[in-house]
Length: 164
View 1: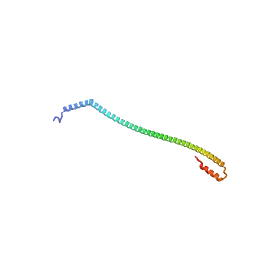
View 2: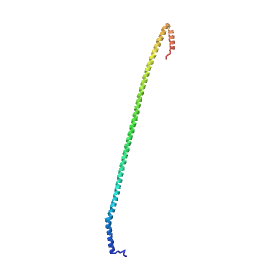
View 3: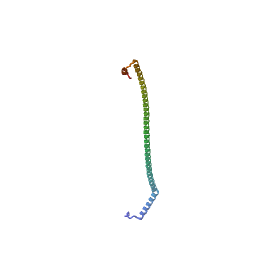
View 4: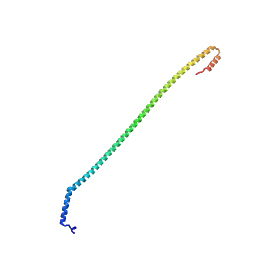
């Protein structure tokens, strides 16, 4: 029954031992334990802050990447438009040059044809004049008084004419 009803001496020594253990723990154990818990808390807080900073940096990098990607797309579209415009200009210049060359050749051919036509008409006039003179000469040489004989001679000579 002594355990249920402790004596005064036992209470004194238990209190004294508890006080000494409490003093030793507070002097040597609690400060390092509290210090290590505080350090752990600080390192966890620093890690969370670093993670938050890393997340913010990743968001900033992501937005920068999207901005750069959009700028690259705009630049690409601009370059494609410039290339298309250059292609259209080159094609238009080629068409214009071909049209001018065609017009020059047509004008040159038309001029050559006109010259040939004038030359052919001059030759034809010369031949007609020569034939007319020859015919008149033949008529005059035959000295025909009869109109029917003259017409028959003209018709005969016209049939014999070979126009080339």
